[in-house]
Length: 396
Image (cartoon, rainbow, N blue to C red):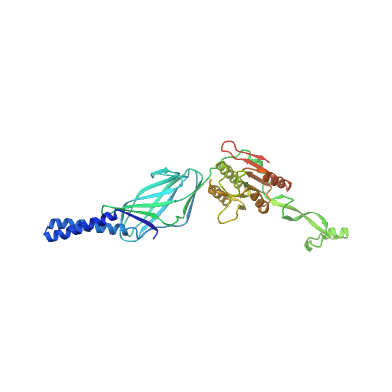
């Protein structure tokens, strides 16, 4: 059973059928054939009504396939509900009611917003042993994620009096993800270096350009045998080891702090300008993807199944952009965030040491210390002033 069922009018029908049965017995002994006929009709209709209300939803199935529908603000898409009536009892003139987050609006279907929820109400009918697809055409209104919060069906009695009210028990797995609108950030070209592809010198990197040594030094016993520079060894009559330039791939690192300063450790809620942050970061990620620049993303957003800090590893192209837009859409005002010190500690341990670091959100003293260390390591740190009208990106 996937439906919680409430029957209205069942008691009245039972009582009316008893009265009709009594009248039928009386008319039988009184030999009143007209009265007997009327009583029989009422009794049969009452019993059929009771049976209909009790069993009409026994085999009503709502397909619950997992699906994520992604669209941008202003785009339209269809959320399709699939119902099957597996027994022979038809459903006519039923009312389907659906509750969603008000980040979408109906297109060509009646919707109302009440108590911060969007309600859709449409009539449906299903034949016995029948199947229907109900396409709900929806338009993205604002950034966010919504699942169907509730599905309710009111089925009127096929024979007249009474109705049955159904509430879907199970969690509905389809969801709608509305991406943020990218808002242009001026002077983005300052982030795009002349050498925006390939390798970039980084003294703190763990990677070395082994094909082009830049010098030699005295050999120590921990050096690999293949790194010995034999020509320099022969010339100086002492073992010398090749020294290679430390490099990193040219890339960007986004760091987003969603927490206001001086908040308790256990905190639900994000910064007030989250919409502006999402839109500006979406534009920068889109720009990097178009320019072929790889990037990674850190957010002090506590995920349910993953680590306490969200980290999107370095990548590029449309696939990476889709992941960024997806996580930006999923941040809401009731998200659980971590302190900035935990965010920056995680960044220090996990970041790819990109030459460009873009920070967004409140900085605090922890941020100042961390960014100073990044600059010592040869990274350029920029601060994103997120805004819908006058965004700016400035060197830290």
